[in-house]
Length: 93
Image (cartoon, rainbow, N blue to C red; front, side, top):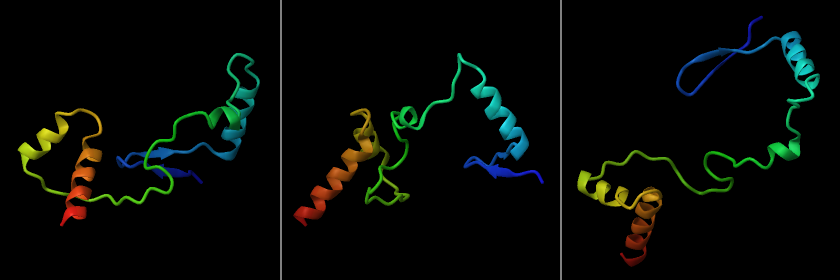
């Protein structure tokens, strides 16, 4: 039976069968110039997405264009700056 997964974009990908997966793994292990990464090596890569333990919620929020452009004009981190501005408002009101 063909196993599939659906990506966030909606694409459907076919997964290899157990036999195909074993053949792929054996071929990778047999290539001395291209060995699979160890668990320790994989652990060195930066994790993508929300940090573990983060207490944030994803929301849709409508903001006036000029306000958004002002925050974005400061470059990377504009969402963090909006969060800081909202936190400051909450603390003072």
